Image (cartoon, rainbow, N blue to C red; front, side, top):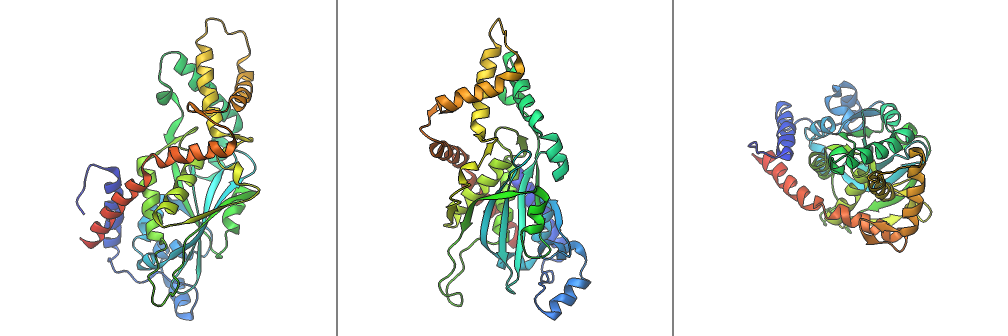
Length: 347
């Protein structure tokens, strides 16, 4: 596959090259469902065995996981069964996806997919704390009031997009890293009516990997109020639903918590930051800076604005948020990337 100037192409060249260095048609990744595969599982190096069926919880960067996955022929036949969007109830109320796929042998593969500000759960939680969250809003507002644009001053470090692979075929070891979590929604895909005669149109792990790489390539920075874990998880769900006729079922009690922190949608904090910027331009500022955020967020909750749109209720706010994500053209970006990926594998 020839190199192009896009980051997406560069990522896929690395992955395809890795596959070729491993021999292209590598031995199938082992599935712990037969004695033969168990022997293979025990004897293989960690290069492939940890991708689908690790002996202990395996966590890696998205790029590393995808590179190894693309060297595994079984990946193209591991169809996704469902994706559950989860939200942690403590700390920064982190959001992640639990992906369940089925190996051709029938064994379940369970993955955790998420975005963090730094590598590792502990590092992410310490760097993006409640104090950090509010201070970032105040700092960016102060910088913008001094003449810099808000887009250039908003927190934007390289994102750490990661994948965790369960060792026991359940989401429990992945979710345990985040404390108590709540399910927000479940995405499913239509299964073939007759598996023996009808093609399976559900996405595979390969499709998932290319979509995640596409998101990582086009949105590589962790931007606190825009391209954080909420954005990464929701973008993945929306794109898969559009591409593969997915059916999303919101959780009746918890769906409204999606993309919220301390009960307020993240768009309210962004609106509060904008208002704070305007207030800091005033010649006299005779109120304590530390009490500004809470007051502003309360005001914007009452006014109910989202980027200039009137919002009648929180359901409408979520719809506007989804439309903003869709307008990024992630589906189209994925389709282009998938075409490049397939062309590279066939070259």
